[in-house]
Length: 100
Length: 170
Image (cartoon, rainbow over all chains, first blue to last red; front, side, top):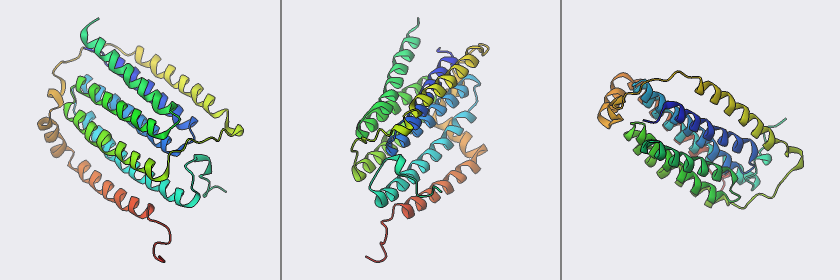
């Protein structure tokens, strides 16, 4: 069997790739996708620990994370569409309506 | 090297490769397609971790729902590559890479120091729907109801936010 630490390292790599995408990209849609990737890497960690400790609470937690991720992507894309109606841009640097 | 390890390395490499593809694609549609591959490989990894039901949910919710939603929005608001390479923020990707390297080094150091644990091959009884459903609907029923309220609020919020402005006057 593959040890849990291998899954944790893989999950950390995916999380870091997602974090670099959030910091480095300017297209707001790609930033949303990178946030989804980061949430998924945490799901992988939770499931790996659920197997290691033979405890289903980790898998139940993944259900909650999936529900939150679905809600987050729906609201986030709605915000993007609302912002696009106003400024005709998907560049994250143009999102400064609430800046003071 | 066992067959399981080779399989894990292959699927993991595909997963990391598609993740890098999501971040590095110039066109948003390509990113969304890489994201689809990424979610599929994660579902395969869930099966190897005795979470068969969650693997199915992963394919249905993420690959079937969220990626399609993202693709719809890309089609709606356009996916023209952004040509803005604003100079005043050119250091941000390098800062991101540096912080990411630090995070990865910290996690890796701690994970490699972790004591080895003997794994039970039958852990979680295979994560089959019956076992997981009993656990979910007996001990964690409050969680299910909170998730239902959350999804309802998110639905209403998305409807309200994505409404076309000045719809009342038209």
